[in-house]
Length: 293
Image 1 (cartoon, rainbow, N blue to C red):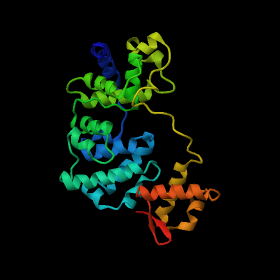
Image 2 (image 1 turned 90 degrees about the vertical axis):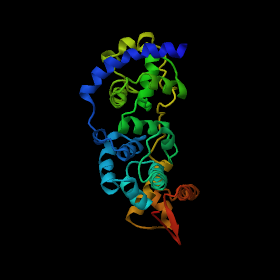
Image 3 (image 1 turned 90 degrees about the horizontal axis):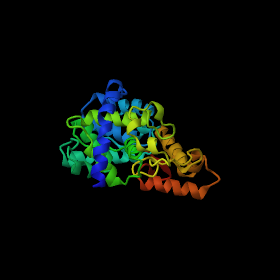
Image 4 (image 1 turned 180 degrees about the horizontal axis):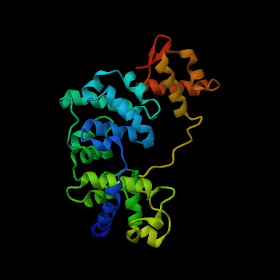
């Protein structure tokens, strides 16, 4: 009964948010297409990456790999060259593997059902629902970190994964799955933000229990909200990126890997990082050299 009452109450945010958001939706290239492949690429690229960094890479990637079949036929190294600067290259590898599955099992097309989408390498519930909502206009709730934050604050409650998805699905206005989810993401990103929410000017502050009651912010502990990343400068992520970037220009001697990564004084750490890249299939070892896969 509690969940039902919560849904009835939270539905009251729908009309004011649509009125606020639809006239001022942010302009991104992936919002101009219903192509499932384009939407999938945009969602994979945007995970844990700032949007302004994604736009040029998105355009360039689709110029080179406009279909799953063309992507599947390319080498991972070709994809990684474009991916440089986005970080988290495992996402690129998973997208490449997903394209191969599409060719083998789905006639070179991105599948349409939730079950088929989540069966693709690297595609979870969020990405699958995003493809359904933004390519096929399905009435499903898309719960990214922004949406989870908004729902938790409006309810003033820490929400688990199942509960936040249940609420998100239940409040999608019929026939407006695309519009509603875009508005919710924009609202969370620009108004109900993580660090400096604009509560005073918020269009739904009279429906927000956290605003009314105060107390600890329930968003950080809610499932699906982003957690602070570890420091990048001097991290293993930075070292991995340096080696992968160097390989775009050519092969690197095994003995030079630590130097390229800027950690010559930490040979054991260098060995561990290189081994992880090899195991992930993000670099290849040929004789005494490392090179792109």
